[in-house]
Each structure stands twice: as structure tokens, then as C-alpha cells.
Length: 251
Image (cartoon, rainbow, N blue to C red; front, top):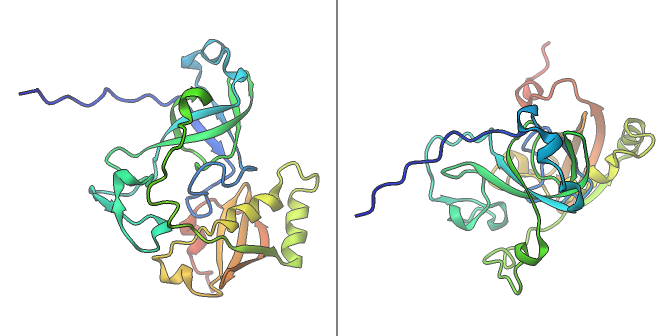
């Protein structure tokens, strides 16, 4: 009989991601769905980034191994509800759900540049503050499989929303990003186009429900009716706390 293998020693965190996405709601479910999304990763000094990052800038993309630090699961569930299945279940290992025995994520990001100890990234699907466990260069000749099959995913396409901004929201977005460096308007449209709502949440799925999510330093307010999302306003975020935002105003 083979002896049980002990788990790995404590994993080390290279640094925490500084992402334009401030909470789970509104963060894309896969990388590159929102190409304009940006993030920075500052490597901790103990890992001697002046040496450990040497040569990385020659690559166009990197794999990020991340720790889903906000995972709230207390017990293991062998089946989960991917958004694409609209309430249906699938085995957790046939999905990329963050609710796993080890909440580790694998994300492919575009490497925009490396400056000193910091990686500048785009096409992100990770929230602000996510601990990064490792960075590996993407190798097209070995990381891209020929004639790869995507299992149940192609037969369960996720419908996209048509997104429009109200006149107020257009003004708000332009005022928040006057030079267009953030690409805030495009970020909002791409984030909402893939419908961030939880289909198992009746409150979110109600036509016309007022919803909001954090993006960069803004709070985006929107509603969805049928297959169309309308952004009503884009306001400065007071606190990046969902609980604070959900509290009813005091009389």
C-alpha cells in the first residue's frame, strides 16, 4: 500500500494584485472577456524582483496562480452551479469555480510591461487584493493545445447584454476619465455585456432591479430589462465595502 502524501508546506505570496475590480460582482468570470481591465502586481522585496523578474518582459502573457481569498465555502461540494448552466449542476473539477478543495485560480493575463518590481497587466479576471502565489510565462507552443475540446461549455453559451449609458452616466464617465486613459466607458460596457448577475438570485434577475458594482474608484449603477442593460449613473465610491453599500440610509 502507498503511504498518504502529506500536503505541501505553507505557500508563499509573491504580492497582492492591485486590480480595477473591487469586488466579485462585476468581475468577469474568465480572463480577457474585458480586455481593457488593468492590474498591477508588485513583487515583495524578499523575492529580489531585480533578479527574479529578469527576462520576463520579453513575454507577451503570463499565467497567474492566485488564492481565492474571499471564498466563503466551509464544506466541500462535489457539484456546483456554473452561470452558463442557468441553474444546472456540474462536477467541480469540470468547472473553473472558485469553490474548490484548494481555492487556487489559474488566470492568463496580458503582460503590458515590467517596471522595476512591478508587473503591469491587462485582461484581468481577479479582484483587488487577490494574493498571487506564482507567475509563469505563457508559452504558445506548449500551452496552446491543437484541436482542443471545451466540454459542455460551447453548448451552453451565455447570452450577452446590449449595454447603453444614460446621458447622466455618459457625463459621469467622461468626468471621471477626461483623457480616456482608463477607458472607463469601455470597461463598464464590457463588464456588463457579459451579465454579472447571479441567475440563481431572484432579486438580481428581476427586470428593472437597481444594481451596482465597483469599478476602479467608481460605483456603477445599472438595471437590466430583458436582454438590455442601462447604466443610470457612475459615482465616486465612498467605501469599497458591499455591506456598507447595501445598508439603508438612516432617516
